[in-house]
Image (cartoon, rainbow, N blue to C red; front, side, top):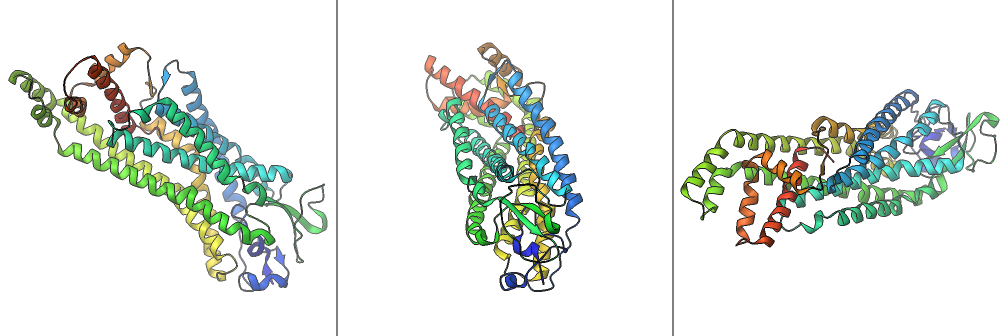
Length: 434
């Protein structure tokens, strides 16, 4: 006799407890006989983890949205991304109470077939929306910090809004097959074959069985689900993960290059038209406390970027690796291997959920909360911030503007636009506004 969990396991529900059995007719396609997996721990572990995620996600992301929408300042591109990210993290958290209730009821699903499909869809839709928005933000950081002059047009709000809309549409198309595969099914305890059916009445407890909400697919459709599940993992996580790792590695290399190039010497060498006294004053101002501030800001930027990348990997990489292994090995792996994969999957699944509130938490912990990341409409406010920051921070801008040639109103306006872009991108590298 084999366990029902190996035959009809789902990524979220997982292998059923040992008291649920299947008939011997399915033995040829499943794990070896006498494979018993006790997963009673998940009925305590997962509800606790999902409940905490729900509370933190609801509270932190709500505060982020209220702060962002309540400000009277003009939204910049970073804030647009942050609002979209907080929105999808909030919706992700709102889908968790249904799963918590199901686990507390020991896998019984009492909300109907439509809600089963909707909750499973929202779970993955918002999960991959969050990953895609984090990917867009990493590309945004890379272009703004490593190629500020070439990507000024990409800093426009219209482009960012179009990118966000495209993310919602692409992820919806990518995850909409879940509506077809996810469904309710009847599980009979104490032996006998399982009959897959949609809920039509209050018969979930008849004959000692219960109604379950399957996350992947029923037995007869599981072979069709595996290619889709692998494709979803590759396009929804592994490709974005490579993009994020590459973009942030380039940003770190760029920051290291600025650390090896003291701004005082660079600025003095480029300013051929400046008098000797001006160069001396500039060198003195940069070599003092402002240069120390310059170094501290860039070291903080490196630490922040490393933290972002490591947290992203910690939250999503174990989950997708174990889920991919599960899809590939189910019905093919040995009993010991399936036990290991099942336990690892249950432990890593809450990690993916934690990202729904870690984004907002890091925003508050590392960001300058007294000044939301929005630019005022008045140019005077922009000039005030420029004077407040000091000359050392702006040495790359001075080099860029001198490469463009002579003066004029057009050069001044272009210089101001470049300055505004690089100021914002410098803030991006030192603040976690994912």
